Length: 408
Image (cartoon, rainbow, N blue to C red; front, side, top):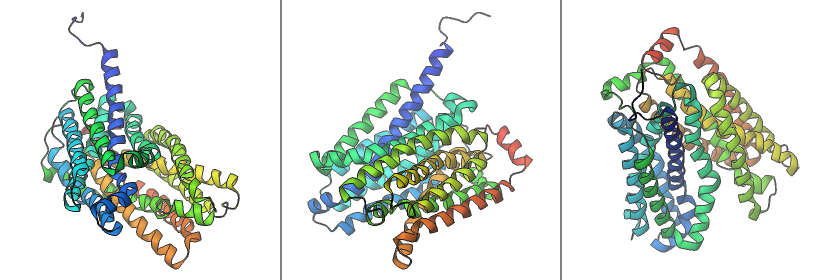
């Protein structure tokens, strides 16, 4: 049978799919930078708005808790919508919100400018991960999701430092204007480049929520909380460790953190490569390596050469766990994978907040020098939990996942 001239060549379709995944990764870069850039802007905007840095810091809390609490419900409501239009809408929300933040005359308007994108962010993560896999097909879904998650690592490595430098040159309002422009640009590019994706069948919220009754899925969500708690118990205070324990000059700490993130890009690729071979096994191995790196940092801090090795091990495992956890939780869901992806983001935020609390408590009562050991102990708990969760997986779960079009 001959193919008509109106048909789109498969190579062109594949190229469009790959470019769309890269644009989703670039959008992730803008979105994550929007989320975390506020940290570097707090002193300047606090002075400009005539408020304390402590009060300005509540903008961070507002964003995190909004992501954690609202994300799953919103994703369940919109997961059936056309993905291309949904992504364009989300990036439009980010463009308008960043412009609103740039124009904010007071903390209340700025708070609104932070609240709105916090609603949209988890919807993006839940749907972008699933859509990336659908664009390239099941055999390459893990790598596609890791490419989207490369936006996270790139934002942590380059977006936030460059944004802070931009704030020095343009002031904090100029940084928000820059993010507004980039968000709008991503929306326009996706509108022209991204092919249509088969629209998911609408599933009621109650039906989607049935995944919350599945022990295997619940076990995977609990595992994400433990893993992210381990990660951020120590990572939240890494700059302090470098300065106070490793005696790295304050002016050089930023470069060390950037090196940590650059090595993390390797981990992101490794995570996407190995997660397809078994998400739970990949989680267990990466978490064990994470424990080793965190525990070795303080003992090796007297030698900067050895410290680099420990931080390299830590950084690679740390960033590898982002795509690994996302793929693992989504594969654990027999259906409603967009909701599953967003629930993982919520669990990650819960772990981030809990890790920061535990790390602060450790510093207060045991000292900064012991924070790596405590974080490593939590990571070991994650390794053991991954083994326990694996025992919850049965043949019926795998069959249901295949029936419902799983990523595997």
